[in-house]
Image (cartoon, rainbow, N blue to C red; front, side, top):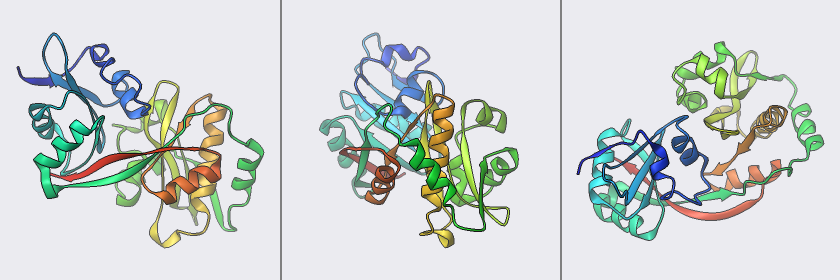
Length: 255
């Protein structure tokens, strides 16, 4: 059987059941990303693909792993195995091309944010900086600027970003130097992406931008989901009010 994009994503829900990852939810909900699987009546495995991420679920399948590579955008992906079977297969097939790394899941909890503290974080932005929502002008700047492209990169146009995405930009003299935005969107929330231009780091800009985005999400009744790629990201999340959940395995792969 051939591997194909699955139109009826409900068929894959059982394979991903319990996976607390909003990018998987985005794919299953048909909002962003795609689900691929062997086109069989009884689906045994599937991959949820969105942006730089691919989440492999069910029974490990060499055919699905290799077929997915044909659809991957670009030559770098982060592959996330649901189980050790998938992890072993990825390591076996890609060898040195797949670097096993740890990522850090953050709990998804309601009513945990100290709104007053978040407002103070925004108000204590260093002198000379301003914060505003990512508008069309900033969206277009992000599209053509490498360090901040992930703020808007998964949205095909500004209209889509304005409709289902959300972001806050930290500006210095009118130029974007830091920000917090939706890497992706799902029903009821966003997955947060935070980044600061290298020469403006360690000034508290990410903290202020993250606080501003969380406050805007709360106003819109959206959940600001956070997944940490390193321990520094975990620390920032906890400073903003989140709680650490657990470490998990991923593979950074160059095709």
